[in-house]
Length: 591
Image (cartoon, rainbow, N blue to C red):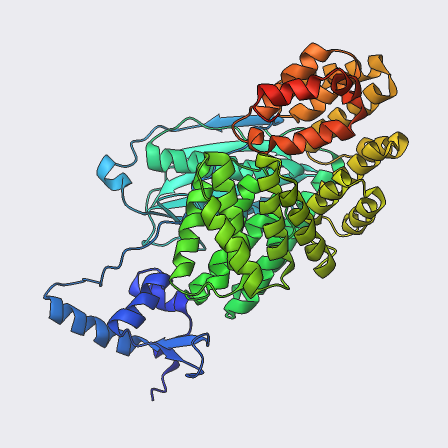
């Protein structure tokens, strides 16, 4: 046994860095090519690993002598799972950009992995209590670059091993920030790109993403045109939320930096993933990736990462098809390790359902198998039961068969019983409305509101009161929505729907016009818009929007749920009495 600690590499991450290949590849070398890896507990495959540099060198020498080539590493095909993310469009206070046009990479060079180091960001006019901001910004840019194709981003100091270096300065004045970033070639003193951003602290998340995208475009495609972050005007509580996020990220980086326990990182990632916020999702991605670096055979971390990627579409943060491709690739990797745990089934169902509804692919047989096999193996898992319930709910939406809706209710009811705080119980509350179980739906929502970090439970609570006829309570809830611009717009449409139901045509029209004026292209539920128009007597516009919804390539696949909602909504009452709903069904072949 060797006694020189300098000879020891203590984690998969250190081993992979030493061999200059990713941890997953090194793990395969251990299995297939006898790479000398040791475990602290030889009885457990999940035990922490270590290796000796001298043994790795000897193994490499044997491989080289066997192949007769210098510097050759055994090549094993890797699964591409790093993402190209897109930037959401918002407005900004000001964006000031200066760019120096310099040829960067030839076409041949662009096919290679490009490495970037981001140095600690310099703080200007910040006191010691604001240290978390500079580190949070650097981590945010690092995380955004890390999930972009062909980029390897590293924190820390300048190194001859990287191709580019990012330097930055940040100034803060109350809730306003000024961020200046510069990009340098390795070993060069003149910046090839420089960009200044000014905006609210609440917009920092989007500024980081835009800066990362601009750097990526310049390096990978020679596109020097800057994309502005353009976030919406934000409420004061959003600045507080971003401030809390940066502080949490700051604390987390210190907690995970020296953490060599992949399972602990996995459970931390699971916690942030289940917050169902984009910021929490980003932290979860980093934690799951760190867990995989430490243990490339930790199947649960791959599934957690796949779930995070699927969340971008499922939560409507980013509709890029790339997220689903990479989530699917991760799940394929899991199939080579182990699928004998409930999260695999629930996330696989989520990914395939999204592929089916967003791409029009047919996964019915596979989804049916996963649903039955998953609950057979793991009948007591709440998220899996909710996932199976959601699949049956989708089946009802596309076929109108009552048995599917009954099964959806049964599985969601079980999921709620197993975990009343599960966020997907909002769908359970929605299904309860179809059965006129209003007070049970209220109980579900009131429980969720206490722990929900999104606005989902609050919106569902407002809807329950609306369908109960408790318009004052519904109005009070939607009037208090003051979070994202999307949520505000959705709440405005609900307020207009309430006004229309009361017969207050003027107020309904005023809110509707205000909604269309502030954002004419914003996606607001066609169902709500249709309800407003029917409520104020404009049946032509109302029919136009409900027909558009029911024939939409995605939402049209579950139009039978829209029929039930129309029957509950008093604004559609005259339309239904006049036979409008029957004519709509007949026109769509659903009579």
